[in-house]
Length: 431
Picture 1 (cartoon, rainbow, N blue to C red):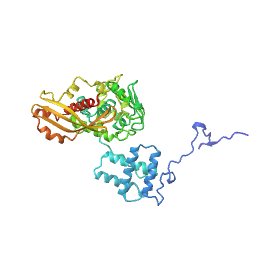
Picture 2 (cartoon, one colour; picture 1 turned 45 degrees about the horizontal axis):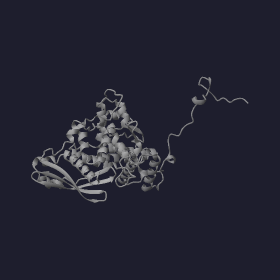
Picture 3 (cartoon, rainbow, N blue to C red; picture 1 turned 135 degrees about the vertical axis):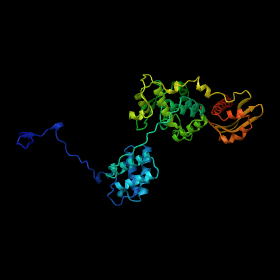
Picture 4 (tube, rainbow, N blue to C red; picture 1 turned 180 degrees about the vertical axis):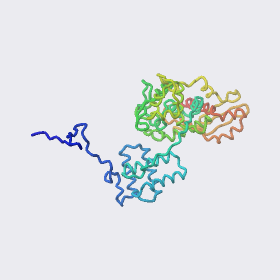
């Protein structure tokens, strides 16, 4: 039996054969997806808003959107449905444009409008096979320069951190350039002391990467590791050791230390990440290497707040480049250097892991008592120092000599007070 050959003819009568194999024609593909392919068939009249939101939530989860993205998308979706006061099946291009104009008139930023447009495009066009956002372009976002802290400000911030946990957290944020959420989720197993790196597990975009570990703090981290398991968090929650520290709590820790250090009001935890990249560039590290440390998918994102410099083959954590003999010595100078004033901490009763103490500022004129100091030993080696609001000591400070009173309000005073509380706590423990 002969082999069948499909043949066709040109317009001039010449015969040709259809190509086969990899060069052969492909079967047509259905590009226009209909309601049968949609996650939610909005052509049905009985689709309630609650059912619609539940199915969208299920689809976002099985597509492995991050928990934060799911929360943001569902919140924006429910806000849109409440504004429209109509079933989801009536969503069209005009309704979407009216909603975006409503957000602009309400004073929403370009980022928030872009986030809502992304949500509407994902939910209605990609998942429900509509054309509600066809023709709409993502609005332009303002690209302002980031806030970068100087090396002296970094030293003042670390000196003003009231507890060892705060100092370790803020120092590692600057030393590694990690995001605050990534740092809070670091476990002890992620620390590689041999290579001097920290693994960022499932960072932004569900990507793993390596960050620098400060050489100066290796001994400190090794000492803390002896009392922890590999699966435990480097910064556990004080309420539950099985959970990590909340990023909100870390941001409050930064704000408290920044206020004590007298830093600018516009600095945030993310400013430490910007400072990490800028100081590495100033030290000669290549821009693409910094891009890998920060986990940026696009080099233009790194180029926003940095500039190209010469290449350096051996990158060093910027924390290791801080001069301990210069500004650090000034930041830790004793606020009561005047021999007429001395600081003493006295511990009183204990309530479980909490010990109450008061500080005595002793001068020639009088002895001032600063009440309300609490030292909480959350776990062995971790001491949290809680101080009352600054206004609580205003009356006591008023009885001090003017020069001593002014020094007792500076960030250096709180650093000295922190060291005095730690020393007194160790004496009480008999260490």
